[in-house]
Structures are given as C-alpha cells and as structure tokens.
Length: 98
Image (cartoon, rainbow, N blue to C red; front, top):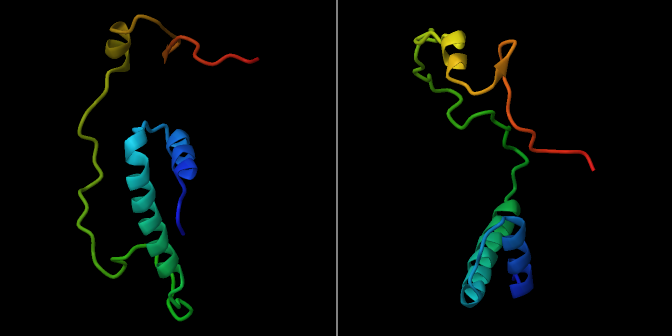
C-alpha cells in the first residue's frame, strides 16, 4: 500500500503532528513500508495457533507483594489546596454544553 502526500497530511492532522512540507514524501515512504509489512504479516496462516493472553504465559512472574507503603493524609493535602469542599477538590470548569 502506497500512501499519497494528502493521506500523510491527513494522518498528521489526526495525530496532531506538525510535519514540514519537505518531509512529507519521506514520511509517506516510511509509513507505506510499515503498512506493507503489516499486510505481509496479516497473510500468515494462524489457523492452528491458539490465542494467548500473554507471550510469557508459562513463565512465573516475580511480582512484589501488594502492600501499603504510604499513608495519604487527605486532610493535610487538602489544606494545601486552594479550593476543596466535603473531601473533594474543586477545579475550574473546562467543558460547557453548547
């Protein structure tokens, strides 16, 4: 699959990325290479392969003990806050209905 310059611009816009005009052709080539690789991988026969939840399913994972290591004093922290009420932090409204 080969991407056009317009498609790269659209992808960059959706990803909120700024790409210089002189870099678009290089990005198109690199992204096209990646998409071709994904297409090649998707053609592999996986009929006899069972899905796994984790690639290291049979290995034991050494996890730390789940224990409380720090006590949070909410009242002390809220005393540092500019606005709080009934145990909640009050923050400025950032979204409104139209």
